[in-house]
Amino acid sequence: MSCRVLCYILIEIITLRFYVEKRLRYILLKTYWEGEVSRGDLVKMFGIASTQATKDFQGLKLSYPNAVFYDGSTRRYVPDHALGQYVSTYSFDEYYSIALAPNNFAYIMQTQSRAINPEIYRVLNKSIRNSFGLKVSYRSMNDPTGLKLRTIYPHSVIRSGFRWHIRAYELQSKSFKDFNIARINPTLTLIPEKLNAAHIDNDKSWNTMVTLLLTPNLQFNEQQRKVIASDHNGSEESMVIQVNTRAALLLYTLHLYELTDFTESPPTSQHLQIGNLNNIWTYLPI
Image (tube, rainbow, N blue to C red; front, side):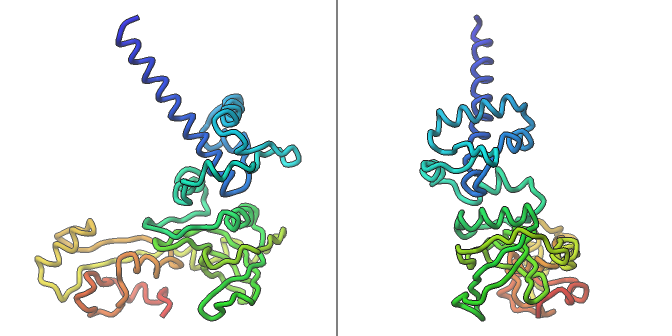
């Protein structure tokens, strides 16, 4: 057998092992964060045959003993006692990138995020996937103790750039709001029923797309403004940075670009300013 053939076989083996490991990591992460996974999930996610999915679960038992076990009542694999030790170095961000991103209920804006309690997220995930409600104790600046119970119906997960949120309909206020996942008490309770008013189609602010035009602060000279435009991949000729976002996420987007002064003449400590303020003013919570 020639050296070229041996190299080809070796590359094929390494490539195959890479994809197997990726699927095994998917199983571990999905089970850890969502509390369950099935062969069907694996087939749908990676486009593999069900026989290959079965082999992957068999391989998981050998490589990661006692990580998951099969629950015959739900016909899904659920966490076993050793799962935590295998995923202790995996973050929610990695779970997002491999398991959550393909779903349409997640909306991400990239930057460092806070840690998330998997016990809380498992219930949130089940609520979103089934359009069920939740009874939650939520700490806020107005209610720092979180003694007031709220009934919410979440439809999306949001990474705002600074922290993870859920977008949800709140029954008490009859409106859609954002809830910081880190502020939700772990004792949340699933309400296995749907509410028509809470459907994502009724979230007007979420379904309204907004075009944000940002320009370098006009208090800088032309050469300085060109530098600022270049920093943000804007054209040095027009010096306009166009950003498309949801109305519900407009404030998060502005904060990502370090905009806190929304006037027409912000201080020079703010490099950018809003170029179409009149068009987006109605969406600003001020």
